[in-house]
Length: 212
Image (cartoon, one colour):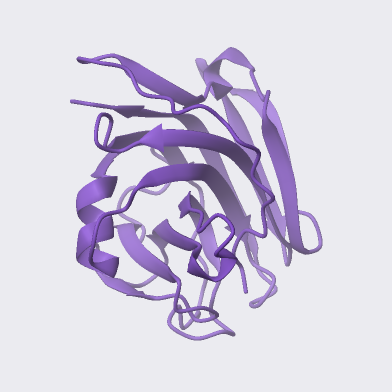
């Protein structure tokens, strides 16, 4: 499956009171510290580059599937809101995203909830820029019932534009899986086109959690 087989270290909970932000990715500062590689099929190229007036992480996939992840522990009771910035330059053609052959996305942001020793309970929410599913659509990942896909953006209307997203991860987890989510154990990004053999270019900006 295109999930994250991560061995997560024991990290302290990252949570701040009030309106403070809990940073996960500081790509705008040229900072890649703590981000590790996860390969599935070949290697998507990730590079920090100046893009206009900002520094961002560019992802270039050419029939490949690899991602970057960062092990964190986020207390969603205090900071349930996930924010990120991204830009997609092209969509994928003819992909059936509900199927294994179509499990390709120009951009996705994973939020991973580890089951700890109960590794089979590890779950993930995949926030994706869909090539063809309507915004707001959710569906099970084609490879595992422990991951859910959420189309946050879709289609060509905002291609080539920087978009800032905000999701209440705690609410999404309750809606998608039922029950309480506990803590977030990792955040990941991936641009992948291994199943369709196409090319995709996306850009990732900063990622952070907040209370408000």
